[in-house]
Image (cartoon, rainbow, N blue to C red; front, side, top):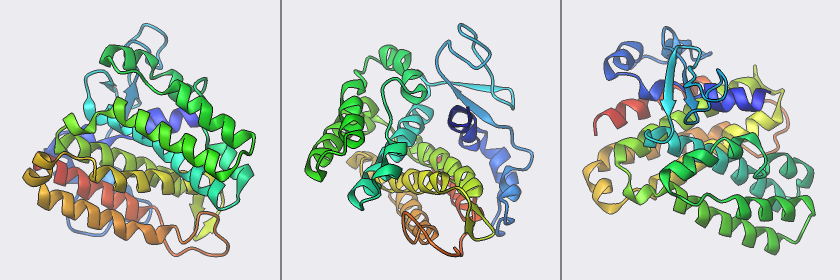
Length: 278
C-alpha cells in the first residue's frame, strides 16, 4: 500500500551526517525534480521498534540500509506524529470549507496502519496515545456532524497528540530535524500530486499542504529556552516555510499551478542544515 510506503520511506535525509548533507547542498538552486539534494543520499526508513518491514520481530531496514528506532529517536518520532497531524489538519480544513467527501479521505482511525504501528512506540515512551480522540473525530466527520461538533473533536485530538509529542521537553535541534523530515515528505507528495503545473493527484497535493502547515505550527511549540538558543535558525526556518505557502493557492485547486516540488526539497535541506547548528 502506497500510504505505508510514503510514510515509512518517504522521509529520509535529516538524520544523515552533516558532512554528507553539506556536500549535497549548497547555495545553488535545486533541479526541478529535487535531485540535486537527494542524489547519492540513502533513504532512511522510520521503523516501529521491533516491527520493521522485514517482518515482525526484525529490526528492519529502509532502502538505503539504515533504520531508525522511533522509541529513541525524538526527531523521527515527532515527524511521524507530525505527518498524522498533517492528514488531520487538511481533513479539518476541507470539512470547514464544505468539501466533505474529500475531508473523509484524510481522517485517520485507530485501526489505520499509521496509528497502529505507533502503539508499541507509545507504550515504550510511556505516553498514552490518542486512539479514542482519533476515533471520535473520524466518526464526527464520517457521520457529517455539525462544524461545531467536528471542531470540538479536532481540538480535543490536537491536545492529546501534544501530550504524546511532549515538544516542550525536546531540543530545538530535534524539532527542526522533525520539520525537515516532514517537509521532505511533503516534497515527495507534491511531486506525485503536481506534474508540470497540473494537479494530477489532489489527495497527495493536499497531504503536502497539511504536512507543511503543521511544520509551521510546530515552531511555536518549542520551549522558551530553546527558542532563545536557536532563535536565528528558528526565524529562518519560519521564513522558508512561509514562502512555501504559495505552492497551495487553495486546498482544492483549479487550473495551472506555478510551483513544483523543488521548492520543498530545497527548504527541507536548508532546515536540516539549520538544525545541525544546534
